Image (cartoon, rainbow over all chains, first blue to last red; front, top):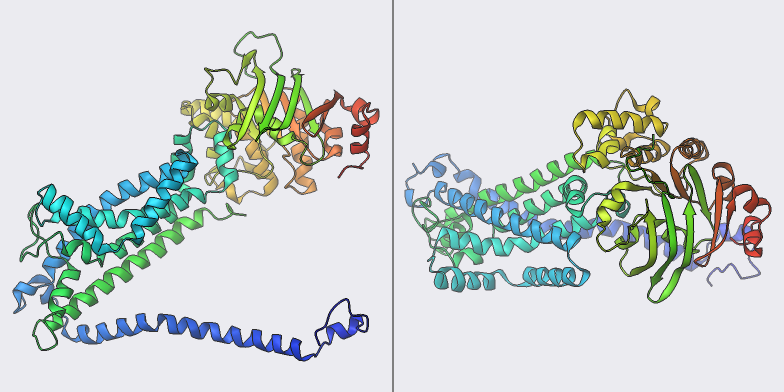
Length: 303
Length: 258
C-alpha cells in the first residue's frame, strides 16, 4: 500500500522509515535507470567509434606523405588535388553562407516584425529538412544550366552555400535571441539604436554561439556530397578559376569506393575518408576551444 | 551639475492625461502630474498596479513591449516625447533608466560607464572626464578607480547597480528613472544605492518605482500611490505616509494589500 501523508495511521517517523514495496521498487528503479543511461550512451556512440576505428585501421598503414604531394605511383588519384578542391569550395561556400546566414539571423532576431521573423524561421527549417540531393538538383538546374555556369567550382560552391546557410541562420537567430532580455532593455534604454545594440552589445555576447554555428555548418558542409556531385565535375588538377572543374574529398571517396574491394583504387576511399574524419574532428575541436575561450569573458552574465 | 543647456523655466518633466492600453484594457488610466526640479518622487502601490509600466512610458521604453499603446503626453522640457517628429532613441539618450536587476554589459567598468557617450561618439577626453564624474556621483569611484579596465561582471551586485546608475549619469541627464533599483540587492548594497539616490535628488529629477514603503520614506520627497492604473494620491512623503486621505493608500501603507 502506498504511503500517503493523509493516511492517519502513519506518524511522521514511519514516513522516514517507509519500507513499503512500492517505495523500495521506486528506489531500485531509479538506481537501475541511472546505470542504464550511460549504457545507452555507449550504444549511441558505438557506430561512430566503429567507423573511426575501421577507417583508421584501413587507411593509416597506407598513409604516406607522397599521397598528398602527388609523387605517388597513382598520381591521378593523389589526395592533394581534392584537398585543395575541398578547401576552395568551402572557402567560397562559407563566405556566402556566413554573409547570408548572419544577416538573415540578425534581421530575424532583432529587426523584423514577429510575423516576418516566424516566416523566416519556417523557411529556414524547411530548407534544413530538404534532402541535400534536392538542393543539388536545384543547383544543377539554376546555376549549371540556367545561368550557364556549367559543372564548375562556382556552381558547386553556391549550391553548397544554399545547403549551409540555414544552419548558420538558425544559430545566429538563436544566439541573438539568447542575449539576456534585461541586457537588451538596458542597452536600448540607454539610447542605443538597434544597430548600435547589435554591434556593440549583442554581437560580443552572441559570438561564441555564432562561431559554433559557422564551424558546425562547415563540418556538415565539408562532408556533403550530393549538392556538389550534381553541380561540378572532377578534374585532375586543382581548380584554375571559378568556372573550372573541381575535385573534392567526398567525391574521391565515392568514386574510389564504388570501384569495389577488388580494385587497386579501393584503398584511396579509405585514405580520403580518414582525411575527412580528421578535418571534421579538427573543426569540432576548434569550435569547442574557441567557444570556451569566448564564454569565459561572459562569466557572470547569465545569473 | 545638471548640465543645463536650454534656458527652460517650466517643469523638466510633466505628464498629461497619460494612459496605457494593453488589448483595450487600461493598465494606466489618465495620469497627470508634474515633477519639480531637484526632487525624488517615489511611486508605490501593490504589484500589478502599473507602476513599472508608468515609469517605462517616461522614456518610451513601453514601445519595446509589443502590444502596448500609449495615449496622452509626456513633456520633457516642454516638448512632447510622443510627438510625431520625436525619435525614441534620442529620448532614451536623454532620459536614462536603471532596472530591477543590475544590467552591466560584458565589457570593462570604464566602457560600461562610457556606453551612453560612446554611442553618441563623444571625443575621448570628454569621455574620460564624464566617466570620472559619473562614477563619483554614483558613489562608486573610490571602489573602482584603481581598476577601471577590469570586467564589470567581476563587481558585486550592489557595485554593478551603482555602475548602472553611473552609466545613466554619464550623459549628464536632467531626469533619471529608477525601476525598483534595489529589489535584487542585499541590505548593505541597498543602503549604498539609497544614499546615492538621496544625493542625486538634490541635483536632478529622480523618478523611483519601489514596492518598499520604507524605502520611499527614507529617500523620497514626494510619494505617489498607484492602484489599478490610477494615480490615487500624490503629495509630500510625510503627508502621504502618515496622513493618507484615501482609504486605499492607508490600507497599502499599513500593509493590508500585499
